Length: 110
Image: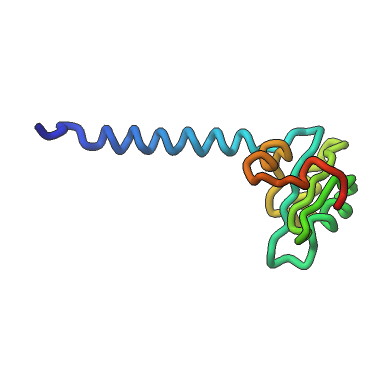
């Protein structure tokens, strides 16, 4: 017996994908205070550490490549300042460290 409503499954699948993407975006959003992960663009001449320094933040730890670094968001507008100084993505350090399995993300500068 054929399904009389084939678009129903398309709607259900699309809804599922949309809800999953929304949850991922919500989890990765940076907090107004606390630890954030800063990603520098691979094509940029600035590392994540330089972006954090230009934004007036403190560096907690950094990846070997320098393209990802953790910082403390210690003043209002810090996340906006990171984007203004060249960050391509700023997210919650806790969620990103858990998702990407970054062992250096919770320690001191390496």
